[in-house]
Amino acid sequence: MSVPRVDPLPTRIPGRKPLVGEFAFFVIALAWPFLVGSYGTGLITETLIFAIAAMSLDLLMGYGGLVSFGHAAFFGVGAYALALSGVKLGLNPWAGILIAVVTSAVAALVIGYFCVRVSGVAFFMLTLAFGQLLYSGAVKWRGITGGSDGVGGFARPQLAGVSLDDPMYMYFACLLAFALSLWLLRRIIGSQFGHALVGLRENETRMRALGYSTDRLKLCAFVISGMFAGFSGALYAIYNSFISPDALSFAQSGMFLLMVVLGGVGSLVGPAIGAAVFLLMKQFVSSHTEHWLLIVGLVFICCVMFFRSGIYGFLKQWRERGARA
Amino acid sequence: MDLVVSQLLNGLVYGLLLFLLASGLSLIFGLMGVVNLAHGSFFMLGAFIGLSVVRYTGSFWWALVLAPIPVALIAAAIEVVFLRHLYKRDRTDQVLLTFGLSFVFTDLVEWGWGKDTFSLSEPESLENSLQFLGGYFPQYRLAIVVFGLAVALFLWLLIEKTRVGAMVRAGIDDTRTAMGIGLNVPLILTTTFASGAALAGLAGVVAGPILGVYSGVDVEVLIPAFIVIVIGGMGSLKGAFVGSLLIGIADTFGKAYMPEASMFLIYAAMIIVLLARPNGLFGQAGSQ
Image (tube, rainbow over all chains, first blue to last red; front, side):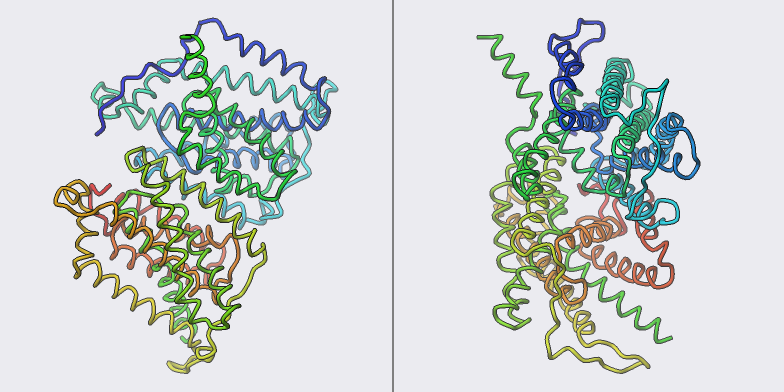
């Protein structure tokens, strides 16, 4: 057992006035599609979608200390649930989003039931195994999932004559979804449950001694995290109009991990920044060279070796240094 | 009947190939606590370097001898430059680091050799088939069985019966005490990591004629190797051996008789073992 660190909670206490940065973010975000072309709008839409998934992983990893290597499983389950409810069941895509969230929550409940029983390396291996299990399911179960050909041809949601086929509306819908997710996740982390989760990360034995049911806490975090990932997956399916087993792959889980590590573990906003930087970098690098994977790998290595607190941690340190001077 | 026997042989071949990979993975985990996601990359690298050696020398045997050497050197460099600085940190960091490395290797291999699937041809002296037990058995596959068993025996003797092996075991059991009694633990770590990588590279060459040589083969073999060490018990050589044969044979029979369900069977086996015996079949309780 390591000596427990007594860190101040990395969250802001709810009720404090929002930062200027956040206000500025939403002003820029609202004006964004009018400033850049449709290409830029698409890119930011994708960023917002992946930011939700990255934040959901951060809830598990940064606050609960549970490093999942199979987070793409829930992202993919959400995406497939939306796609299949449209294509196979002919349901309204709005209902599809709801189904996606519920399905991924159920998937997280079942998988989490097993995973929270083990910890450390076994947790990592088990999440990896479940992720691969779902991936191979999506590849092999051709009759339902279309195998590696994927699923396409489902409708995008519409409301009162506004269709998400329009990239602009899609963007605003995703911005709303992102803001909602950020707010909800903040509330969750600021709640008693969130504090208990941090306590779990810092010292599980003590939490158990205090009378907390640690397995149930972990399972709760797992399900909430899975739900948000599934929500993000559903949005991704809508945005892309197509879904393939790649969304469930080991590589995809790795990309989510990188977004979190790059942005800063345990800061919620950090992983969202991580998602943005990751996708921008991908866009930039892929248009200049074919060696995208090489760059991803090197960034990963640099983050782990030298840059452990991520972009968010770096910015925070920089600001604190500025405040002292 | 002969179908069953030939499937059994194929299962043994696959299992022993997995063993070459899993033994290194397991020892590295046992000794350093590193879950090495780049281990499949060493396999892939060995296969591609082997391919180039065959092109230059025209001989499979040279590939078998030469390919593991650069792989071992690269691995040693990785241990010294990166991993060594992470032992005191959280386990997650090591996993993430090797994950990043696996991306780098995939890209480098595609850069150097392209994205095609190459086939490494088996040595001419082992091209034929032998006939016994009412079936034909390719000589090359039989040779892999003999080779794999020989490597397993060699590793067992090395770890259990020699002074070097005793040092490695001391490191696995209690790193601090091992350092305390004057063992050069950093050297043991580097050597073990490099040797494990060399074994993986060797496996890449041996498996070349059977699995093919392509970028992406790394994940293809890494996941089953992980399942093997989880089932066998991380850090245990015996566990890696039993687990490899179990998974190799189960997977081969599964693919032959239940092609739809075969992949699920392996994962299901892993999940069940992890839940019933989190330390695996032969893992020591409390080890890492």
